Image 1 (tube, one colour):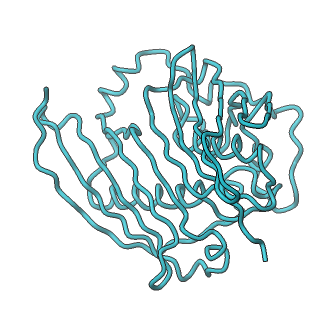
Image 2 (image 1 turned 180 degrees about the horizontal axis):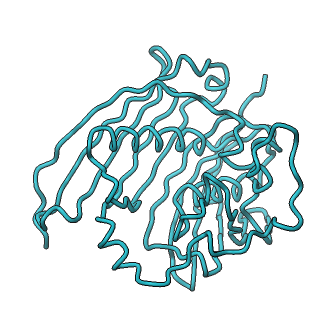
Image 3 (image 1 turned 45 degrees about the vertical axis):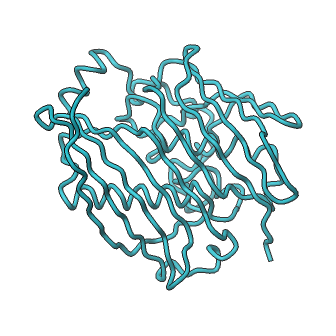
Length: 286
């Protein structure tokens, strides 16, 4: 086993902007909804990596590979009322380096979104970092990138509402959706060219796309006007290539009158590539 050096910690505080119904986060422009665990996950992800690059924890020759990703919204109804100018993020990084000439190491970031003394959301991500040359050697030659794939919207896309970004047409990430009392199944639909969910340079299914697919899958079984995803934990088991179909199965594992917990599995080439646990909750729109 590779010996691990002692952990270093780094903390940074940032002012952040809450995008609410921004197309970057899926289908919210078409179906308005509360800010949720996927929205706040995206904010904390951006804050974490901005901190990592600013502090020199990540460099341009580093490739971060997700191991675990968690996000939780404390009170969705309150998050709607908060002005984006009042929100700040605190990111605390833990760093462990392997004694192999610093070619690989792990980073863990814990983030909290606050407004004054109120905690709005919290999250954590853990990544393994490879040097770019090692990553390319590991992935091999001829790997399929998103830019190599045909855009399924190229001939049939509508132009979207006035003022929407070009990627607004790629909101949905599910095909073949099937909903029953206790489970939802679907196939992952790759939003080729979507600037956030699947940029053309991507050579595998990204964590953010798994997050949005999990969100859309579980919300398909609920009343979208009153239900919000309040927490989401993603665990990544292996790299998911872009040239293999991905199936999704979400199973309701427990529920109350207000909160439902789902377990979501993603499989590609008959292999488990990602698993997720998500909570949905009823909220009051008034």
